[in-house]
Length: 178
Image 1 (cartoon, rainbow, N blue to C red):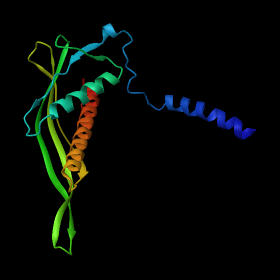
Image 2 (image 1 turned 90 degrees about the vertical axis):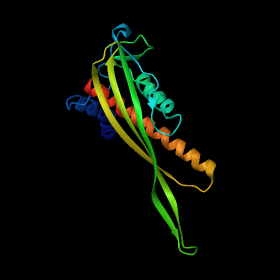
Image 3 (image 1 turned 135 degrees about the vertical axis):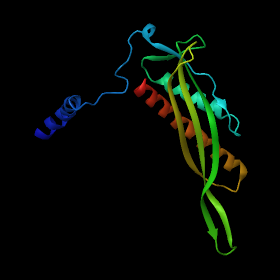
Image 4 (image 1 turned 120 degrees about the vertical axis):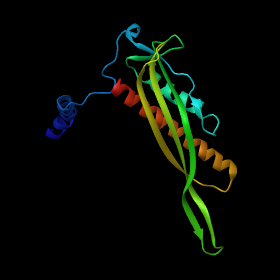
């Protein structure tokens, strides 16, 4: 019977102890009235890399990050209060691991790394002054494959993963700094 009492009280004790340790959820600054929320416009980024469609992947990931988190920001069109824009500076695809077959004296690529470098800026709509700026570079490794269609699918999955990580980093550093 005592064990049962402790088992039922344990979650409440842990909850109360977590309140005093400085822990708070990321969405603790939720604006209750959506009319008070700041609106933000996130257009497609300029893509200066050789890899097509990166700007669409990244814009979708960033928009999703802002849309899924309740907070003081809401996604809007061109008439928004703020403009979050950016440039995809580069896309790198480099081999990072090799395999060696001693029977054929052949060395082949076993793993690639996809990397994206971006520059992101925040401005008040209609203003020239930059309020916030970041340069971020993130990577994702993926296995090489001799089948070209599987190789391309793996590369695209790695790109989407990098874009998701970039979007999360942008949102978190943006929310912390701004």
